[in-house]
Image (tube, rainbow, N blue to C red; front, side, top):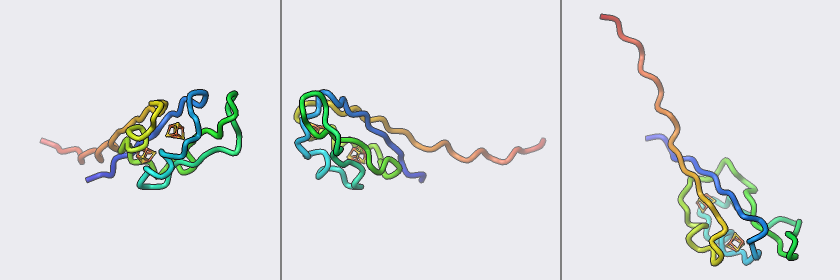
Length: 84
Ligand code: SF4
Ligand code: SF4
């Protein structure tokens, strides 16, 4: 079965840089940015986006619910055309 793919979107201004999502991600997708948001927090971002499987662990642990998760499965390979 094809591996699920995923992506996250972090509400940068709502992130407090608590680091919980970084530790919760099983595939080490997330890191804290060197940049800061307008409140001075180092916000979370996808350092390794190709590794995201859309498991939503990060969103579940985020105390401020600022992570949105998208998940999809790769399209199956088209079957060979058959002739009658
Ligand atoms: S959805 Fe899962 S794999 Fe993707 S960043 Fe969040 S914890 Fe990591
Ligand atoms: S768990 Fe939420 S608030 Fe904490 S660093 Fe991750 S996105 Fe930011």
